[in-house]
Length: 157
Image (cartoon, rainbow, N blue to C red; front, top):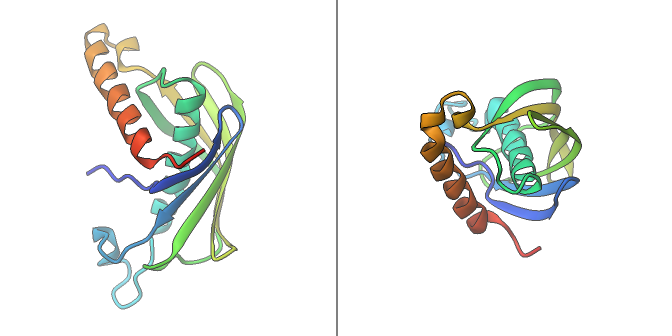
């Protein structure tokens, strides 16, 4: 199952920074068992919110050149607060460096103005066709899908 954990992009400066929000709803299936009687967004999902926000910044910076942006490394990950249903995670990320194959970011998330999560993230960037030329059509479909989703979640810039 694929989770879209960025509900809205609130600001974006290509090559520099992005701000996004994630509203947590009790309807999200993974909250039902985490934890019974005390539902909170799992820490791995908070990190995934950071990763997805950084991926959007990278996609726009590279003009949607790559179909696959994947977490390569997460360092200095810190969890400081719980995120409960009804709360909003506000994510900010800055791009520290980028090459043709990777991009490095500093990212953090707050809830109610208090730090909830932070990390230094490195994402890998590639196209499926670079490993198998027969997958070029898959790259095109994935990129088109990401462009369509971007139009849905981007805020007024």
